Amino acid sequence: MDTSQASQSPTSPPPSRSKMDELKQLYWERINPIIRYARRNPPLIFGVLLLGGLMLFVGIGYLVYDTEQYRVLSADPGDTRHPPSLQYPFGTDTAGRDLFAVAIRGTPLTLRIGLIAGFFAVSFGTVLAFIAAYYRGLVDGTVRVMADVGMTVPPLLILILIAINIEGGLSVDQMGLAVATVAWVWPARTIRAQVLIMREQSYVEISRLSGSSGIAIIFKEMMPNLIPYITASFVTSVAAGILASIGLEALGLGPFDSPTLGMTIFWNIQQSSIILGMWWWWLPPIVAIVIVFVGLFLISSGLDEWSNPRLRQRV
Image (spheres, rainbow, N blue to C red):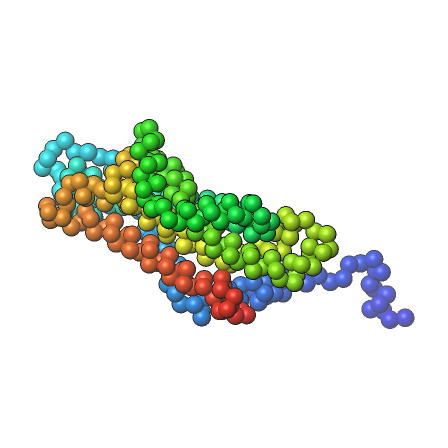
């Protein structure tokens, strides 16, 4: 009898795979395809780096700088309008506020408005698009008419009407929700068109004939195939939400107690910073806005291959 066979108990478990083998499999199956995809999509990398650098600036600023100085109002006229210096890296405004603290505080608030608006707009638009395009009939007609009418009405006009009818003004979160009320139209329209095509595909028909419910077909068969497109729509909606909020804030209808980028521009307009030669007041918010929009545009361009079936490649 073979001693090696005798030494092994019939009930002993087979030797397990080493941790290193599991990590290698995870790398080749999950991480490596993402790296390969990113390498052939430089816009995606540059966009992530731009937004990541901006967030790194904000994060370090919170750690090393007293951001509460964005609230400081100097009673001494001689202690205002300081140009950039070691004490005030971005200078001060006409009220003595530290503009470096304003930039650190305001940048994430502006991004927060865009994220709230994009999330709710895409979520609501996606739900309406799937229900309307799959079930058709009266629901589809109603959603289609609402989307068509919504695209003809100027969204800024609706936002102004919402802002002036809220007592006490809009907060940051309320502004994000207000923008979402007009931003859902485009995702609903475009995603509905995609669902109309998908519902005629053979795999959807097979699921329908097998007895699957409409909700099951939507969540198990159709929605996973549209996740790339929905993700790209979300990035676009975030950019649109930020743009709409800045336009509303520049008109003086934003949160006066929050130093968002749009409200910083509003105070520049109110105090005539360009005429006063205070370039250090209007330049930082403009640069931050450009970085945000360029970063989101590059990310959206980089996701085009993933979201567009015609351009999609195997990674």
